[in-house]
Image (cartoon, rainbow, N blue to C red; front, side, top):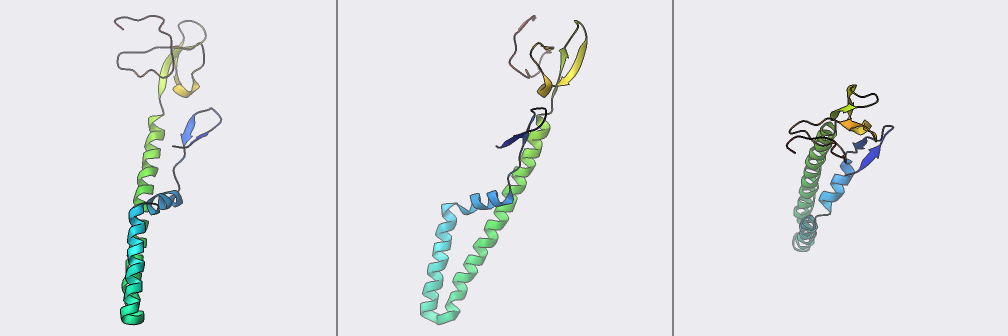
Length: 138
């Protein structure tokens, strides 16, 4: 997944473009087999029935193009929603002791700095590499 870094070093996931989804779907070898079969069908139909025989091969090619476009759009939409969900999942805050002893504040996990004392409770996620200062039943 691609990330772009903003001013406060919080990585923001970049959603894929529709063109990337279209290239990925079109690169599947199964589609190349179907396209090759459609071309072969069109050639055989043209030899047997003249120009009217090309219709079958052309209709298969049009159907393949429509299916690839629909599948690519569905993948792109799914990936875009996933990236949005990942972005909201990364929004976390943690209670820390910063500055004078006893003054707690809640800050974003992306704004933690060296020296912050993170207060963790049971079941909390550890937002960074930490040293345990004091614990009970760890």
